[in-house]
Image 1: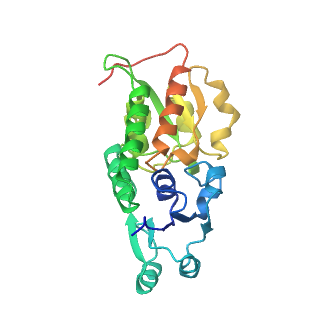
Image 2 (image 1 turned 45 degrees about the horizontal axis):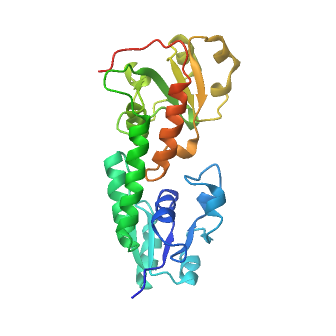
Image 3 (image 1 turned 90 degrees about the horizontal axis):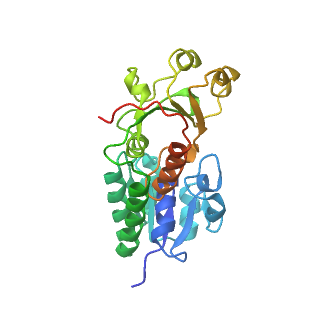
Length: 255
């Protein structure tokens, strides 16, 4: 029996599947991965694959052996696919590097290529190691200002990546948690050393931010916020780049 054919309905599983499965296995990715605003992989690469909007009719027309999707896929869609004899596997959001590695292993096993999964995990480990600071180095207080003006909580994957890259959470230090709204006034009153801007809200582009010379601003691709897998590699490369560009550091001790 040959390797299974697969349709992915989620941008996070899209990114992993495209790395661990042969192109002939991947019948379609989600439409999100072709859109730069929502993709967690190179949209140009995503366009090399088929695409669906996630309906039962579209998936059925492709005749896959398996569908992989988000744990939040509509129950009716899942039931419809399974009633038609299509295997469905769902995945939640990876909130740690360890959880991401587990997802890679699951998806690569489903694709019949465990070795490909281990290869990807090795690349991620190398990127994490390359961007990590020595234990004796100082951390830099940073805020990640996400779309809609919110900040990540300490339990988010991106927060772990920030820590590994040598940043401490300024938002956590001032008592903010997952999805709390950070106002322009709060930034001005208590600026971090580094402000990573991942949104396009009016406050995030306000000229008043230019009047904070001790704070360094940098952009952060929203596509790097939510998914694990190969997205971690790009995230660590960006964080290393930002960290290296900091001039006149005002460090705090690593804790």
